[in-house]
Amino acid sequence: MAKKRTTQRKTARRKNSSQRAAGQRLRVLLAALFVTGFLILCLVVLGHLRQSWHTNHKPLPTPMAQVPAMDDVQLEMDSMLWRAGISFDLLQMSSASGLLHYEVRGPLPARKNLKELQARLSKLSTDLFVESRQPGGQIAIRYRQQLWLLVDFIPPRVTELVPVPVPVRPRIAIIMDDLGHDNRSAKSLIDIPLPVTFAILPYATQATSVARLAHQHGHEVMLHIPMEPRGYPAIDPGPSALLQSMDSAKLQTQLRKWLDGMPYVVGGNNHMGSRLTEQTDSMAAVAEVLQERGLFFVDSRTSAASVAAKETRRIGVPTTLRDVFLDNVREVPAIARQIRKLAGMARRRGSAVGICHPYPETLAALRQEAEVLRQQGIEVVPVSQLLMQGKARTVGKGG
Image (tube, rainbow, N blue to C red):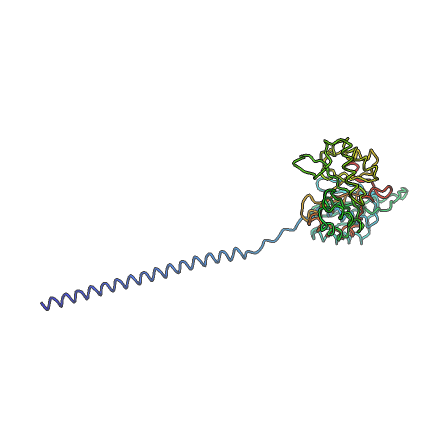
């Protein structure tokens, strides 16, 4: 009996020892699995971190050099010719297949003028180069390997008596539309060293005070005349606008009322008006009031079919037309390019008119370009100076 109990105890001990060994092996296996899983997790996390680091620290691509605007290149060439004493009456211009070609009846400019031209072009792009070719007299401007602008100088023959006109300083007028809603925009405009003409909406809450402020600081004041646009009434030109449904007497009564309430007005231009400016009778009625008040008129050309300039001229109102809208794209670089385009038109024609609006981007671009215009020999003047007989060429007759 004692032997049997001893055997049972030995068997139990072996069984317990076996169970303990099995439990120990299980714990080791679980520990190994845990360590392996932890290592795998660490590797995955490290992989993600490495990928994220490389993504965020990729070297930035080298920006491609911006191609300079042809208008800017042309402006620099025109400016050089003007500084060299060459009148644009002696210049013929043509364009074909991306090449701009000038023929100038005069001698090749001096070397200092060409050096200055190269320096100015280099500010636009280091890939712009000026070549001077002799004999014969020729200037070529290349962008990299591409020929952009070619100028041929044709000296007059000895037996040919060609009077050399005195170069006329090109002039531009800049009209700021839609003023009168607040004094802040007007004050910002006054701080810019350009004699911009104020075109003030008659129904704007601060119209009178803005007109006085402009006059006090030497700026010309125009009435920005609200007129019916296409799409009216969905497109609203403002309260009491001149509409095609009004007869001549009603149109004139409303216009006189606005003029009586706005001090210092010397002229007017249309606000919207793409429909009314196409109506001969309506524009004749407007022109009669402007003529009796001794005012000029600027056709903003909101319609290609406008008869406004034709009617105002017929009735004897001094008239000109808008050449360039400066801020259809509300970005400072785009507006600056439009200002330089306007300057280029003035160089070739003597004068030009631009219209813009009191956007922050427009004010910034005007402030930026004021010194550029001065350096380029472009004179910014009030609109009335472009209409004075004997002082400027007529602007935009063909428009």
